[in-house]
Length: 68
Image (cartoon, rainbow, N blue to C red; front, side, top):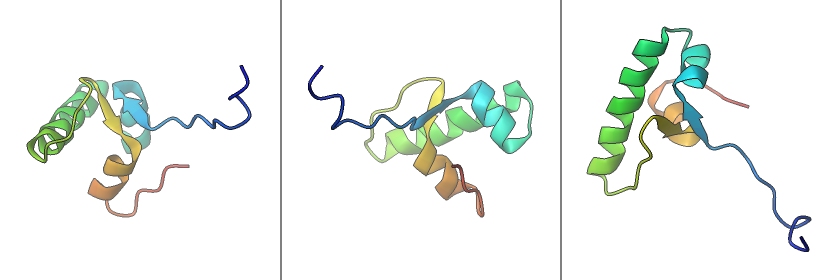
């Protein structure tokens, strides 16, 4: 594809497995965190994908968290 050299794909949505690892919590707690964050985003008028949370929003809500 000719556009491949212009596109850089970065992972910006995390699922419960990744959130559990990042926050050092259980998978069940990670689902609860994702649900709460997605409710907040939906309340602000953003489209949300069930079971996933944007990287930037996760970093904003957890003070000092930097995901590389």
